[in-house]
Image (cartoon, helix red, strand yellow):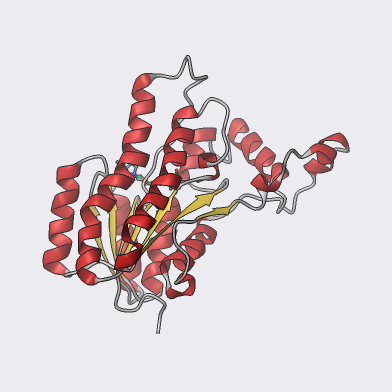
Length: 274
Ligand code: NAI
C-alpha cells in the first residue's frame, strides 16, 4: 500500500515544475491529488497522465491570490471529498527587481501576494477541513532564498523568509489538533521557473547560470523536481510523524559554505559531477 493511500492531497502550482513532480508522486503513493493552478491546459495533461496510469487526480483552476476563488475550491472539496489530509503550498513566482531603492513596488507586492499571502490564504481556507478530519500535514515551499539572500531579489527573499516563519506559526497553532506544518527550501532546481529567471539551457545566459550553480553546489549539479517531491512526500507522510515547524533545505549542499574560499583560490570550484 502507498504511503498516502486513501488520502486527499492538494498541490498548488501543480501544473509544472516541482508541483507537477510532487502531484505525480503523491498519486503514485495512493493519494487522490487535487491539482490547483492558473495554467489549465498543463493540468489537464497531468491529470490524464495520472489517471491513465491508474491513479486518481482532478484539476482545478485556482488563483492563490484570490480568496473567493479559494473559498469556492474549499467548498467543492468538502462537498465532493469530505476532507483533506495533505496540503502542499507550492505556487510561487520570482523575478529580479534591482537593489532595494530601485526595486519596483508593484513587483514587491505581487511576489508577496502570490508566494506569502497565497500560502496564508490556502492555509486559512483549507485548514478547517483538516480540523474536521482530526489530522493533516502541510508543507510550504520556501527556498534557500528564504534563509539567505540573493542580489537584486529582495522581494523574493522577503516572501520566502516569511513563509519559513509562517510555517512555524502554523505548526504551533495546530500541533494539538494533529496537524503538522513544515517547509521545504529547494536550492536551484531545473524547472520552467529557472528558464524564466535565467534563460533556457539553449541560451548563453541560461547556460552560464546553470554552470555557475553546478560549480557552487558541493554535489556538483542542479537538483531535479523529483528530488524535492521525495522530500515533500517524506514531510507529509508518517515517516516524519514527529517533525513539525521545521525548514528542510534541499540544495546539494550549497548553503553549507561560509564561503567557498579555497575552492575559488585553486579554481577547483569549476570541477562538477556532470
Ligand atoms: P514553476 O514556474 O515551474 O511552477 C510554479 C507554478 O505555480 C506554475 O505552474 C504557475 O502557473 C503556478 N502559479 C503561479 N502563480 C500562481 C497563482 N497565483 N495561483 C496558482 N498557481 C500559480 O516553478 P518551480 O520552480 O516548480 O517552483 C515551485 C515553487 O518552488 C515556487 O514556490 C518557487 O519559489 C519554489 N522554488 C523553486 C526553486 C527552483 O530552483 N526552481 C528554488 C527554490 C524554491
